[in-house]
Length: 189
Length: 189
DNA sequence: CCACAAATGTGATACAGGTCACACAGTCAC
DNA sequence: GTGACTGTGTGACCTGTATCACATTTGTGG
Image (cartoon, rainbow over all chains, first blue to last red; front, side, top):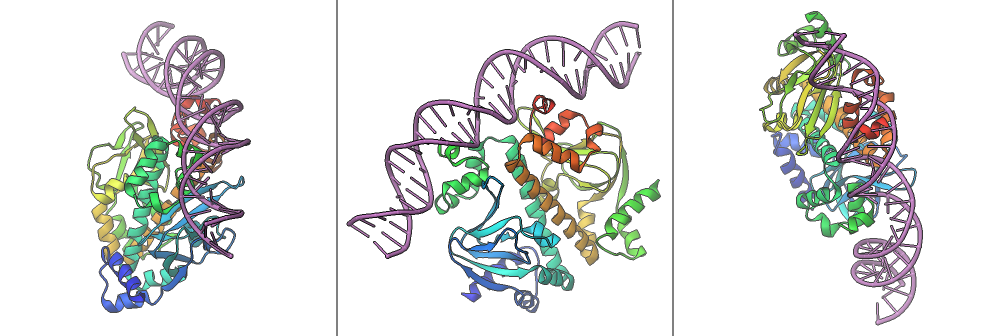
């Protein structure tokens, strides 16, 4: 099972940066495997954030709660996705975003300082993380455009086409919180 | 004037990555200075995209036109901002996003292949570009949250607080296109 | 298997923002 | 200066979505 996590991370990184076995083992030695139960919190608003998480199995969400206690979901995270409060992580501030588990989950935890150390020591690792953020940036821009351009129904269908597994895995009210509409409106399709 | 552009880029990069003079000169030799007139297009939908642009002076916008010919602004870009159609640039596809000039502008143009070459040759350059995209990613997430959480008036005030110079520099209908509302609604505050 | 909680569906109503139409001011070319 | 074009304000009306209220279904722990 520990082997499986290692293989998943290795396959994920190899698509972008080819590391020797020693390099990868060294990289991997900085990740801590953690298991969480459904509903458990991983990052809580107001706490300091010092790590990011690579999902092995299960489904997490990162979300924001506003003053009216309304929840907005920034991201669902499934196997091979990375998740954290990146604003807090990069700027060393307290979390404004929460991360918790929609299902039981296994993750690999990497601290910010270890990531920076590894990026500094291994050029190829820095290359990997540059690529990863590039992808995240492009995805965020696309989502922004979809928000401005498309109505709720269109965005809902888009989401389900991209991630059909969400339909059964997560409650509709969370999907509504991702789309930025009320659960009642989503229910009426 | 060519000197000025070089100084602006140098100061911008130095905040993150300390290069020797030779390294910076080498880096800089890959940038092409270009001047554009107000209204001129830099990236046009449907064309291939092979460069990104670092703004020295003036104001650009990147925007998307939907099927109903409605315009949505992804980003305004002023001095020291980077702009391109990053989706097309990274994935070698045709542009779906346009970039043009709101005012006369001077930019430094860097091709995708030169950036990748430089990132590969100089670890510190790769570090710089990783940092840059990290910032863009965090900004995009913040904007997404603001879109979901705040009404138009709030977002308008937020934008003007962050970039007061926009109020006089760009027409209100472009600000409306950035906020994702009609110009009439913006006009009524 | 029961009991309670969570999730989901649906009606009635309110309101923010879209759309269309028109007025008027500012800018620019000639 | 005149005419054309762009930018901006404002009224009237329409529509999508939020909100509140309640009913119904599904899930879960004991």
